[in-house]
Amino acid sequence: MIELSLLQYVLQHNDEMTLLKLDESKFLDTKVKSYLTRIKEYKEKHDLIPTIEDFRALINNDKLFEDITEISEGLLPFYLEQVEERYNKYNFFNNLYDILNTSKETVFGETISQVQELLLDTQQESSGIEEVDCSEPFEEEEFITRLPLGLGKFDEINGGLAASELALLGGYRGQGKSILALHTALNRFKAGKTVGFISIEMRASEVKFRLDAMVTGLPVKDIQFNKLTDDQLKLYFRKKSEFFCTDLQDFHNFLLKPNISKLDMIKAYSTLKRKKNKFFLYDLPLCNLSDINYLANKLKKLHSLNYLVVDYLNIIKVPSASDSIDWKVQLQRSEGLKTIARSTDISLLSPIQISDEGVVKFAKAIEDPVDLSIFFQKTKSGDATDNLNLYVSKIRNGTDIKFSLIFNKMNLRVSKLDE
Image 1 (spheres, rainbow, N blue to C red):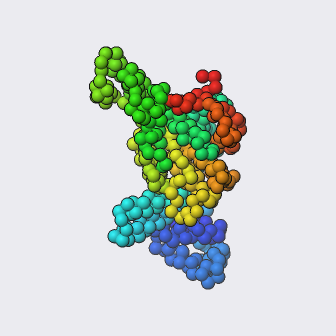
Image 2 (cartoon, rainbow, N blue to C red):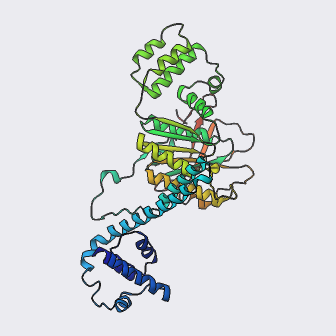
Image 3 (cartoon, one colour):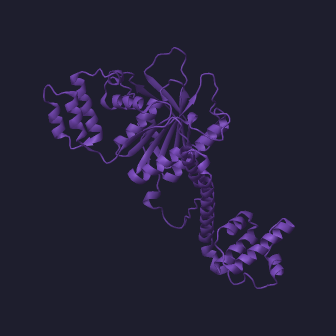
């Protein structure tokens, strides 16, 4: 009976896409398949789908569909979703077979990349139908909960960034986009959430030096060039343990002892129990959207990922891109990141760079998939300031504001003006 309901839907709505999906969904029984064949033949001959009356005349059955309206009314949306799911699975496995069938002609890494691209494409094309009965009251989990980003006045007024939302952090070269993005990730980790940071341009070690300076308050150059004094080393391990570990009393007592070697500190630190939430750092110089999608899904499944930073949008690899600085390519990247944020239910932030020459222009269209856009205010050449001056270019369900933060160039810490 439901198969006839689906055919009736196709005829009533002149729905060519559902007709195609029914044909490849392997959903119909033998008798209804024969009806589907007649509809396709009619469409091929007349270049249109028949009406219900035309189809009844075609098969010489005036009673067809008369007994199914009441039965199908409530169930039809559910079965249309099942058709969509089967159709997507059919296409996915067909495409996967094609990739694997030709894998002998490509290197293994290229095959993996093709499979990852297929997964992302399938995710983007999925209908994601969610039915909501508006007569029911809201459930607690339906309310939007924004978590702070550590951005001072912005958090106070707008609350931060919610799950499934994408934020862009835009500005010119050298304004501190990567540092501020790392600061937001540390702030989310301090709130007890698991975060990830994908570095495309900088080596992971460079990012980690910055992270350690922010966590410990020690000069980043002293950490980077291994110039910490004995007292600074003790402070380094104390602050790092407070940030990432639990059960610290014995370790802190150990650090009070005189004449402890760096090796002893490292050994003692390595035995500490880590917090349940994690901070993952990835060095991916050839990162594409499928890599990001894979990592987001993996971390969500294994560690309940809450927040992901991708540094930065302009250099995410897009295979089809002939011109990496074209705004249409940037739009493709932002749409891909938004799909990942939605499908994994995480907050996602990505810096975007605008060159001084204006080569990479932040077109308004790039903001269409974005929930939040924050930009650095452009400073005059030669201006020296410890302030980071920013403004909100776009926000869903929030307030466009200008705000400033204090930036400590020695340890790269970012704080509110009144801190």
